[in-house]
Length: 363
Ligand SMILES: Nc1ncnc2c1ncn2[C@@H]1O[C@H](COP(=O)(O)OP(=O)(O)O)[C@@H](O)[C@H]1O
Ligand SMILES: CCCC(=O)OP(=O)(O)O
Image 1 (cartoon, rainbow, N blue to C red):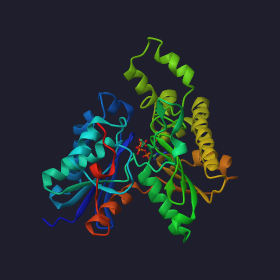
Image 2 (cartoon, rainbow, N blue to C red):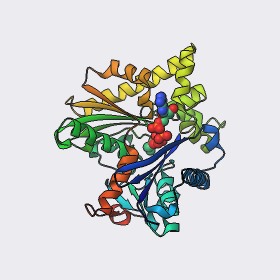
Image 3 (cartoon, rainbow, N blue to C red):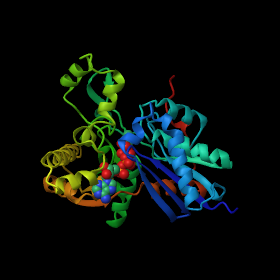
């Protein structure tokens, strides 16, 4: 069979997005949503491998797409060691680090593993592009306030870079001429100042910043420490309360903003307060990042799944439009960005990076 297709796999905390491209053309796309109950039964992210793999393979089968038609497979890259952006070949060392979760656990750790699993069976190559561990921080942004703890760059780097380029193109400008604040509003939330194309700071989307559909974001640390030592919870339970059962899930029992919107439409006052509180925290984070850019902000971008919600984006807009003009790219461009990253390599415009050569391995 003619190998013409690229399979894109984007595992997120609330969904697995899959797409097939033929060169630049998107042949088909699907977002398989995961309710908290679907994932709760797994002990770790890596344990979800067979579950997500079967969902992908069954979907390909239903759509009549043979894996023998694939030319390459690309997955969203995970919490690897801090690394420069770009397209990376999935190597054994990368797989080892994704399995270990060297910077923690997140669904995107499965991206490279799933891509390699499918690619190896077909004897083709697997890649990741601009993983969530891309680190372009200014040194000052690494200081937490406690010498034992460093602030980390963990974020939706793939989409933040893609939509920044998209806006620059639409404005007919070079990205290096612009200062942007990009808020990716997904299962996790990243708010990043993009200074002349570089992501110089960000809340750690896994455990800092605004609360999100399934995460607490930053918490009052004294109360958290007390809770940890109360004897009521194991370490694992606390971790799940922070990531998985925090945010909208913690308050309202769902990670789905569409369900929350229905609750609000049906007069649920608690749902309204919590949804507005999420908007309030996102707006505050955007304003904080405006200071990182010394107030010199050309544009604010709202993107990610939550930015389909007019209720949420209007709330945020109202609070931050004094800073700069706002553009909304609902959902975002992650699938296209993954495909484009691989195409650049397959077309010889860029060389795939090798993980081991780009990161510091000191263990
Ligand atoms: N049309 C929509 N309207 C409102 N919220 C939406 C819509 N589509 C998706 N969402 C919400 O966006 C969030 C997921 O965003 P997404 O970027 O897909 O995250 P992830 O990649 O982590 O799965 C969920 O809370 C989901 O309910
Ligand atoms: C670790 C940051 C990436 C993130 O939060 O992605 P999801 O929104 O897909 O969970």
